[in-house]
Image (cartoon, rainbow, N blue to C red; front, side, top):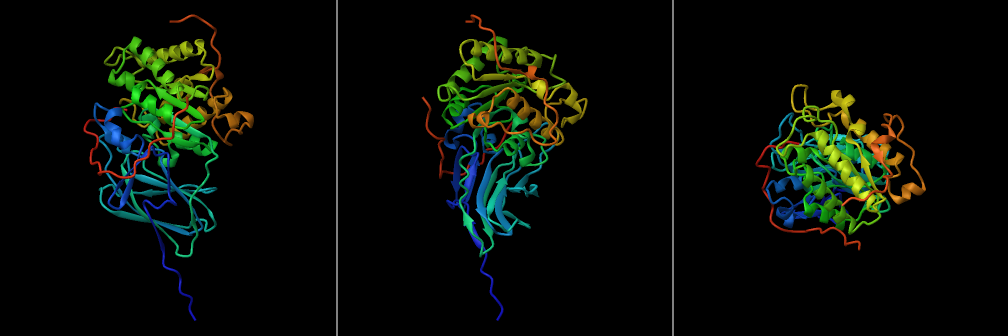
Length: 413
């Protein structure tokens, strides 16, 4: 008698077995779930100038579950990317199983129903993570696994929670695929649970974003600030200092002692000495970011650290940038993201700006990682000078109308 295999098992987009790690809120529609990295019902409060759709680009978001299925089938919708200056971004998704290299899938970015299948999964019980595209809105319709496979909710809640804020450099612009963006690489290597608040052309120290960082659970806080301030002219020299001090102090209302690293911008060759709309050059932005950290440390914030972006990804890395020479070079290329990740993680660890659990049991540096930059890139102590209650978990929405808004203006960084 021939054995009859069980029919394949379908997992709905809203099945409780699925987790949307890294999402701040979930928008539910007719047969789909779309993760957002802001509370989607209030997105206009975070970005009142427009372009709220960028918060629906799921950079760093992972759909996770546990299974022993040897294959995975996915039904989805992916939208075209926002209008960008420079090289185009392709819609890609990574399927990551522990101990294996990511499987990268090219997605159809038409906004219509599409599907893909990945064979050759381990076939033993383990966590499967779908790293969603970092520059394309994505709606999950369903997943399908083998009919006789076990399916469980992933419950790896003991990992340190890392919240990062930044621009398109941190969102993943130029990465080979979602799990190979520099922040994703740091999270994977360190074993940290990433929530990315990086929004291209929107890292201007908005007070609502500070409130969100304050209210999110976090064991490590980091931010990379400066390039959007310089390019968009959102602050001049004095207001940048005041805005950054206020931003950090707001976050500290919910995380008074959490390790917090503030990094200035990586190298931007064409902007280093050229004033932006508010008169600031990139060099002046870095000086003001450093001054803000010094000021806060002088007023007692001993868990706040400054990272010099040029020590992490500086002039010696221009050959690893996405944009060709002679254009406005701002982002790491696919080969630059691993370098930025390795150096960023090494500098954090060297300065002790890591989750408390890791300080008690230091993790070794990743094998084969590029050498860390000099320790001078991290402020761990500032001479004393005279210069001028944890909140709840993030809001998760479960319904609401589908948003069709996309970027209406060019992405500058």
